[in-house]
Length: 64
Image (cartoon, rainbow, N blue to C red; front, side, top):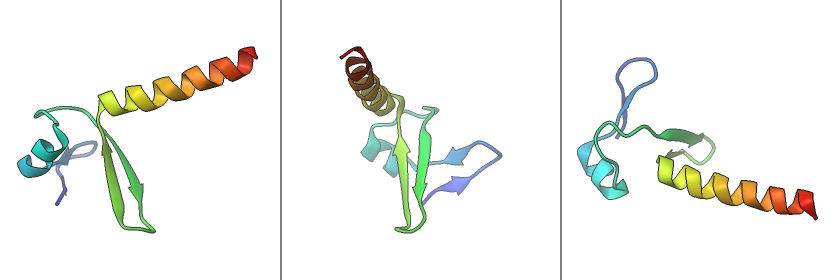
């Protein structure tokens, strides 16, 4: 489904981009789980949600 174009770039097919609501040219983080044959595409909005929640939790724990 995914094609490596040049170093640092992966071509994600239009159908997959639409399913994930990724605009053309959107930068993403790819996370692989080779044991289960899974590749996760994480767009910036998801990373902000995950990291923002994690950092908020850690800051609250540190100040307690």
